[in-house]
Figure 1 (cartoon, rainbow, N blue to C red):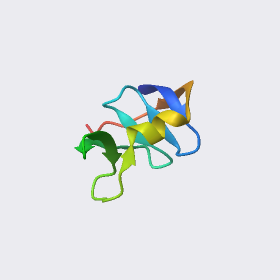
Figure 2: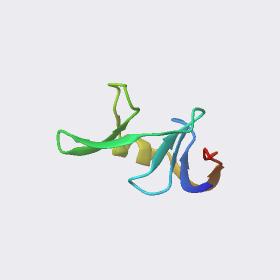
Figure 3: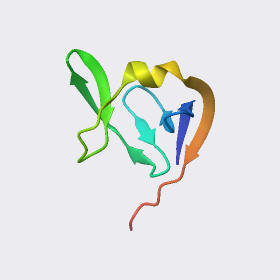
Figure 4: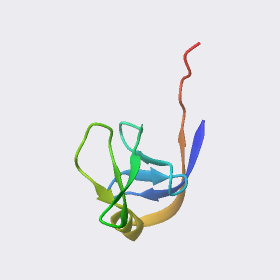
Length: 72
């Protein structure tokens, strides 16, 4: 179970910290990367980047819980 601390309702993105960022409704972890000296995130296999500055503009403090099923 992962508890996200921040939420951006416009982009449907939740943050635990700057390294662990999830996009909803897929609940997929975004990959962290540096592009032209700025922190960015993107989905695995996608070329579309979302900058940290863009995510930070709409952040509110809200707890969102993600339940992950682990294979046995």
